[in-house]
Image 1 (cartoon, rainbow, N blue to C red):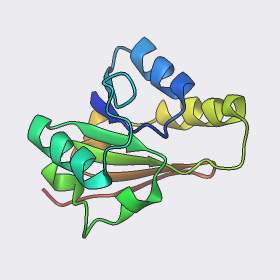
Image 2: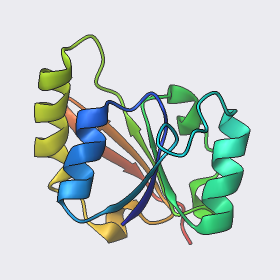
Image 3: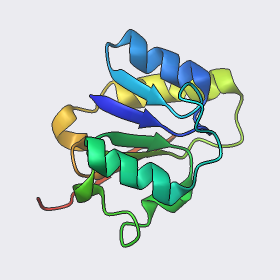
Image 4: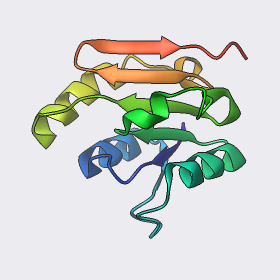
Length: 120
């Protein structure tokens, strides 16, 4: 999977995704900290990247239609330590397939995964 990691995503999650051989373009690594959500979305659309973020705004599909980019993963694991968040993320992310993610909105939470399919 080709992922575009928002700057609010914990670094251990990015490291874990890379260890699974996913291509992860990190906003922090690219020196793009502070760019707007609209700029993130436009770049993801241009490069067909899957946005992965902890920003709930990306769950608004009217503003950020996932079918126009590679897809959107919103990690909604809040008020936990980085270690707890990573453990929950690893468990839940391991069940996702590329087909579940591509051009869809995927919400990852402690309760599991919800997928809003785009219909494309």
